[in-house]
Length: 423
Image (cartoon, rainbow, N blue to C red; front, top):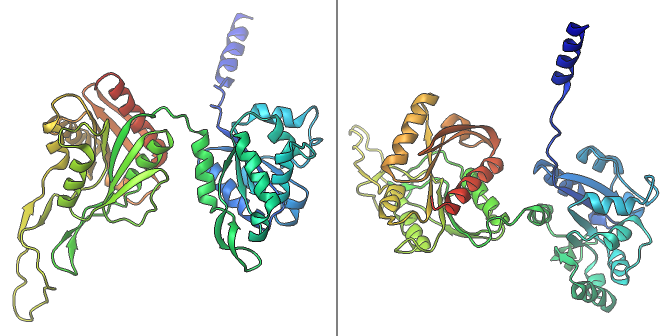
């Protein structure tokens, strides 16, 4: 018996697991607009960002978008009426969600929201819910401009319950142009993510560098590297979402500017240096943290040519004379009299982990920074995720493979902790 008891206990222990961390939850309510099909993309973007999406559809919405589509994208059943579940579904949903997003919102649903009606699941949920209410209108421009709609919008605005997402000026389904087009799904999803994100970086000023620098040989050719800028843009995006005031200094990349981020575009290392000092101030007092994720070229041509240098048949190719670029992070690290701003550098190498960590430790000391994010070029350049180590005066710890947004949040968490304790 004793041995059997032990076996039973052992089996019980191995079968136990910790509950999964709760995901932020949004109720996505789709109403009967032609733009309803775009709700599928909104749902996809939110799920990709780690949000649990509970889909709701009005009866007329199903004329434009199949419920199976939303259910398949979200992994959740679609709720249509207040009688889809036992009890008071609108009340239980209000307790479960962190935000209610109505996208698209028709003129009819705006009128019912303004009147305080609760004659369908969407309006009943809006009436009982005390969480952020995000509304993305979509309708013909004449309907948006109608005095009745303007009164309803004014009433909802005066109530202070609605955050308006659009509409925008553009072509609508009929082919007509004007104000009434649904805001782009990516911007709607970003606004929802912003509403879900704690503002734990409010009041902090963060400067981020991103992308490659480009050093011109002549008007046609240049020296550069493979950096896509994705990591730096992720840091800027997440910092802004968490409430920081963000300046993003970027080399040439094909990435959209993250919302609520001030962007400065540069080309060369010298131009990035000027933008950095302007953002930080001559005494470095204009920023609380600098995240230096840009891949700054180590060298530049000593004498750039004003015209294209052509191949000369029969003549040897002339050598390219290079000169060193300034070490921007080391320059700032050595200029820092106190422990402000917090300095975060990146180290990208092609050696094994031991060599990478040794290089990162050397960079930590020589550049006088607080944290080095070390990763391999093969794990980071041009990819949606990253495998990295954090190297600081206390040692190093592996972060594993994370999406760039997840790694960005961990970098910001560490920078915030260093700032709070005075680095």
